[in-house]
Length: 592
Image (cartoon, rainbow, N blue to C red; front, side, top):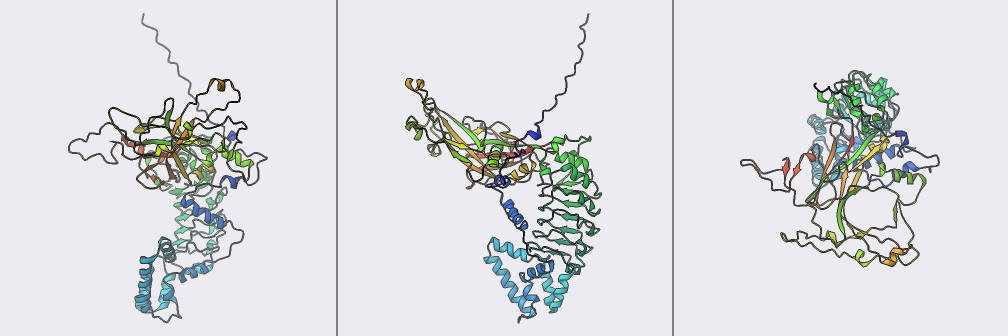
């Protein structure tokens, strides 16, 4: 008889285990936490240069007393600081022709030849009121009429008044009847009177102001407005009023605000029927695991999300709603892609081992640091235990001075010519650190060293802390460790009071700083390259390139005949001669 066919038994589907968000130490706030802990958590954070600038502006916006400055006053001040000043000055003894032939060329020449980068930026800002000021001046000079220049200035189609401390709009704006683009960035605008904005305006830029809600001015905006820029404002929970924005709107920039709830935001944005481009990057909601999937599913008309074109392959074929927890959390990860061409270490003493590892600090994602700062005000994060009372504690001379000798090989001479391994320090076992140093696995030396992937993985239910982490500079250290086993005598083994001698010596071989940026939903991670020929600790952001695609082989790479030698973009190449590090940062998202 033929064997009886086996019944196909379906294996039960494994349900992914999810951490309980409410139990996370990154969210828990004890009742007895000392007031001001939020500010302490943000102290001593190494922000990126761009973030420092915006935080400085934000502090100015949060001042209790801000001097009232109207748009008319700010524009007048801008004009007086620009090259227009002499041409509009009725009391000037110089004619328009003199100004054109003498004053203007000298001013432009001095800026070009002698201004530093800061002076150049200030000059450009003061003279960016509209496009091509020189063209406006030329026409007035040709007709020898200052009034022509005033009329031409009122007839421009683009008006830009940035960094002018404007707190309110006034009716003088109505005089610019041909206005199409109005840019009022880096001011102190909060409650806007949109009725004074000319009806012909199609592009309105209000980035980096004090706006927390659009409720008071949304309905009064020009009915044919196409673009509205509200990035770097104070918009957080009050998103319902976004539904009152003009239906003509095609591009809405809400990036770098504090919008946390993605679902409620998308519920409102679906009401904007012509919206084809949306920017939400830099908000806490944009770093949740289900951000891209939920946004592209709920807003099927989007052609561009966070300045990235939405392709057909980016859309989920079926309506797969993310799990609710995927809109409230994500995993942060750090990966050491590879480290190459570390100088070969000398041979250790008998009984000692040598290893390499990578370590870094992520203060905003560090629950130990957070919990300590909840209950301490001015104390240092580093504390020292008192020294032992007896005299048994001592550091042997073999641990304080390096006695490492170079290896002797039959087939090669020592390639180690650096003294980086001769500056070892003993780890202080009395030091208590109230923060976490995240470390990779420890490995032996190799020409190309690969570490466990991901090197660090952290569950993040605090989306604000996760968002802010990508606004910081992360310092990574490559550490060399010599571990020795201290032998004890017979009497020491029997002694209860004998102390364990320190048995680790370390040397930091490289310190690398990576300036992170907002995660890109269309890319898995952001990659960084550093090598010791750069002459700086700053790593290079690899742009849209993928460093994992480059393969290195210690065997000689043969170049096929007729083809050029391997370049940086080839898939397989020999390791570089100098110390090189490749790192990656990202968040684990639901793939589309």
